[in-house]
Image 1 (cartoon, one colour):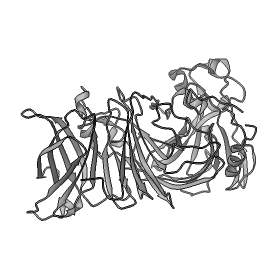
Image 2 (image 1 turned 180 degrees about the horizontal axis):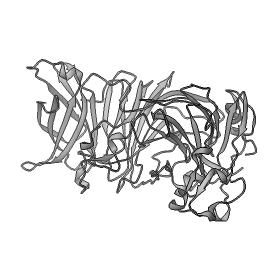
Image 3 (image 1 turned 45 degrees about the vertical axis):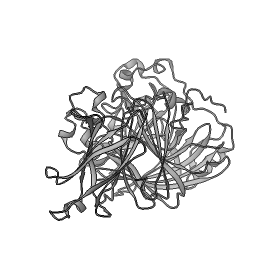
Length: 531
């Protein structure tokens, strides 16, 4: 069996790349990115040069940030201001955590609005200054910095002067009508994350990826300024504008953010490349996968699983429903799923029971899934998946994004609109059988690897009691034997068992679908096995 209709998979494997950009969240710091990425907006090997145009207070409308990005794109790039006074220049993680924004100083505090905004100090990994503006009545006004906005665990770190901010968090009475709590953070390069009602932080998103998965290193564009539109009383959405900047590109983003049982980001973006960008990543998602039942052979851990996301889900432009379980490989793996105008894709967390993880502290069952819904014509391209080796659950080692078929050419303008769904599931879960587990292990009585796939779903529940299903399985190399398809009454679904003998292959691309006669009754399962 070949790849599903409307989706072509390109196989690429690269050796020896490792990234560390996992969260430093604990007690409200909020976010992740290596210091080099956070402060320079570039990979360490890429240097900055010079740009006189920049954000300033004054009249503001919906085209202001776009015009500014266009002006900056024809100017030489200038790296961000990372200079800090002596006491703040070498903060440790604990030092940074000890600088806490005072809740009563929040933007719009006591104004009887549904949103408040707090700001992050500079220092630690977040040395780059990020300009902040409030927009009201058509005017942008700078949000003034003062050390009095913060409480300092170490008084020596309270330095006078206009130090500025590094990022922001947005608060809303998401879970309790009387309590404002953080549900969204923008901090570090172009990273941001959010949660829906009842959730805790997990995976992140990025405004733009450049060269992700390239062994030469990637370039980290950064949001260098934000404009926060003051909401009206009773308004349930907040509008945030952001200016993107890096050595290769400028950009303008507008986020219309609506928190709730599903938190929505309506994103309008315009990109202005300074140079040709051959490896852009749009709608970029990044998270952590350490282990689950598909790769326990490399982990000695008392928990059943540990991950922010367990699989990449794709609803292709041709209508195919795809599920690709994630892995923590021994060597970096790069996969590309070719498509035209996809309906959507996302990194999903399907297991939602405490018993799936048994981790009281980290509560992986409460981490959000994030689905990207393209709006308009995105044309030809591919959903790319990068799986990076990680020795633990500290590293963000999974990246997924849309890569257009054609490069983003220098001096051009490229607009992309999409909706981000932060929530518990795909916004349009298929009625087909969905894969809820991929289990892999060695056999005791014969050579090869045993696979067990569990499917559940409305279409499977609707089958008559005497239904006889079969599995349509395929592999690009190796041998599949011992296929068994049987009901799984414990789940109210069906289980597919088979043995894979990979031989000496360095990787095996597997695919499968559950069939009722000639009719598919499940999504398509794809998996890359590596030794």
